[in-house]
Image 1 (tube, helix red, strand yellow):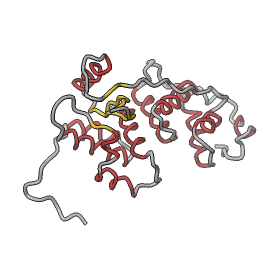
Image 2 (image 1 turned 90 degrees about the vertical axis):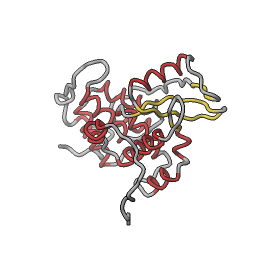
Image 3 (image 1 turned 30 degrees about the horizontal axis):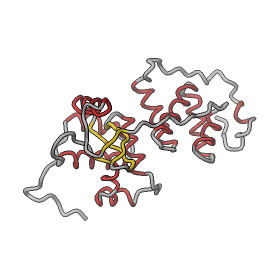
Image 4 (image 1 turned 135 degrees about the horizontal axis):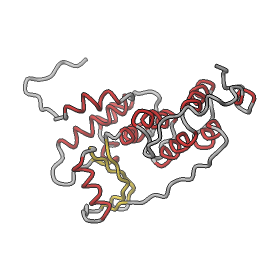
Length: 237
């Protein structure tokens, strides 16, 4: 049990907008813990530029302890949490090599850090032993439906998950679904919750191409998937 804060406890500064706009957007506890720890570490970072690496976070005992008892247990839980924060626009991220070892750098998303990342990518700002790496985008085949897309890129379907996919199939345009899978694979996160969070963000804030959500699936044959290969896992509404 926590015994309370001491009289002269050190504090970690957080902008007010974190509590009014950022915190209400975070739906995942692991994401919240990861973001708070990034702010904590950066507040104590000296020099320029200020960033925290994935390797540093993954070896931080506070981070490890905070995530180790969470369910579902996953070796990629921290990575997924950080990439959720990147997708939400809370953190910025660049893939790098540090002394020949692959790693990832995370920054707070503000104008100063966006300028810093631009300088790093352009080569105008050099960091000792750090090289920005460029990764080719994994190809995502465009299958006939969201169920094939999931099985080809993530894993086997369950009845509960199939219902969630069916809802997304009705709610979002096919191109959005395909692009969300592609963005998740680019981030090396093979997780439906992460993909769904991308779709929700596009619905809330608009996709980068500026198109509004259109419920294009509603007019389709409602028995299409019940009669098909995945009929045994999809429940008719």
